[in-house]
Length: 70
Image (tube, rainbow, N blue to C red; front, top):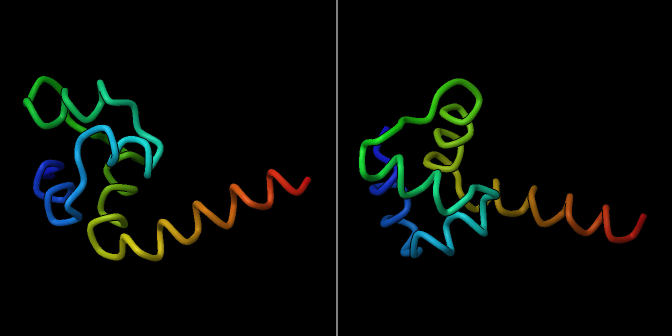
């Protein structure tokens, strides 16, 4: 799982990628520098982002709007 490649294809900085998709900046740095690797659900989530980032962002934004309205 090449997190840097996913992030770069979206033209996002580490900070922006973390903020947009709900990761911490430390997770992004650790994954990109090979200190740790995403496992389980995080790996699946990154695969979804890689496959269809636009839809993932739409879902996240719709969910945030619902929470604000509640």
